[in-house]
Image 1 (cartoon, rainbow, N blue to C red):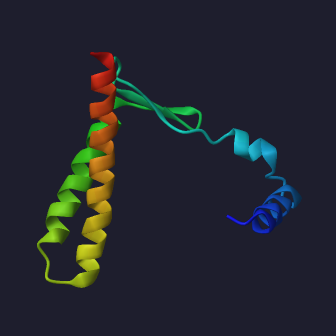
Image 2 (spheres, one colour; image 1 turned 45 degrees about the vertical axis):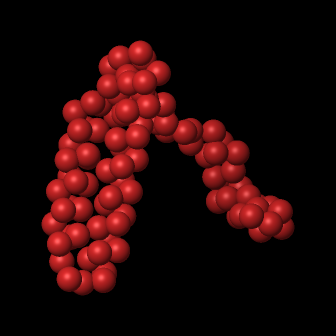
Length: 98
């Protein structure tokens, strides 16, 4: 992102009271393979919730991928990305724990 644009965004964020303090609340997620939980943005996502999300995205992907509609296929692609990302995070945590 060009520096001028970044400065403008930061200036607007500060004027709205969302400057550096807001940036500190965002963090990249960490997955704990031992507990099966993910930690991100200051909260814990349980193994159960992660599995529910994986199941939901998989079901939606299968439902939409079969349709003969370009919009449905694009949405199916988004669901596919989500379910694959969940799988990658869980699988990478298992490999680190070995």
